Length: 80
Image 1 (cartoon, rainbow, N blue to C red):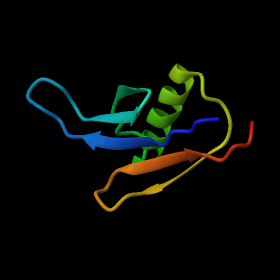
Image 2: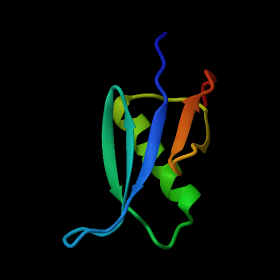
Image 3: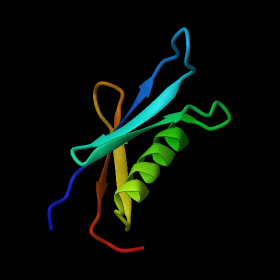
């Protein structure tokens, strides 16, 4: 089975939009509003989960930081 990582990145506020977090993989992307009530890890995790659900990808995921400040999540191959 072909697997793809999901990368999430914080997008700062603009003149017309508040902060956002974008999750993307080769198969697609999704952008969510940044929730200031949550910590950064939770915001990135929720964006990853939203994209995984959108793409029909189920199971266990692990994540970590990249040097540029974005996050990367990979599927462990285990179902949940």
